[in-house]
Image 1 (cartoon, one colour):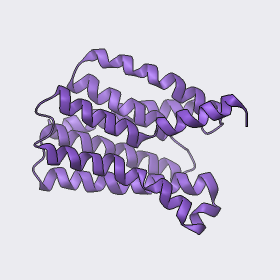
Image 2 (cartoon, rainbow, N blue to C red):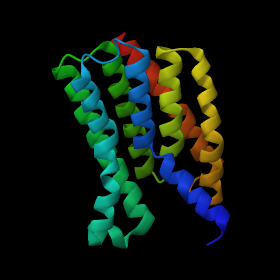
Image 3 (cartoon, helix red, strand yellow):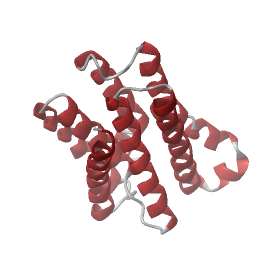
Image 4 (cartoon, helix red, strand yellow):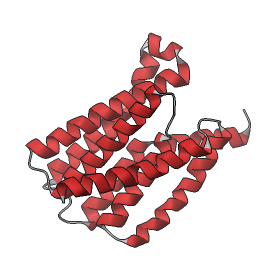
Length: 192
């Protein structure tokens, strides 16, 4: 394997949505004191937005029927685990009286995840990696400040690695970048 392909694979691992969600939630905790109702709500966000979706990868490696499907099976399972986590988080925010920021956060992830799932059914692979970077940047811009637009610099290696490994087209990457903004504004219209 060429060194550039190894680097591209490492970038793909680092830019999965669960890692970006962890970074987002931690920054919201540190920079927006009213983002989470309590530390338990922050821990719940890490569970629903990061840990549960991340569990798709070891599960895909352990389940023989999914393992046989290779990358396609892994991607489909990652979408399923993510949407389950996003639904769980959304219900948690509603039932545990989460803050408006929590409600918008979970709703944005839920709409984005559902959009990716629907597109996957129709064989259009919206980039979850681009969505996973763009969504947190969008939320930080709206909830903390516009200087977080610099976070889009992270899309450069994300896009490069996706193209290098032939995982997505430019259109799929663009869709993954735009989808969370749409989801965020719909969520804000509902909860703010």
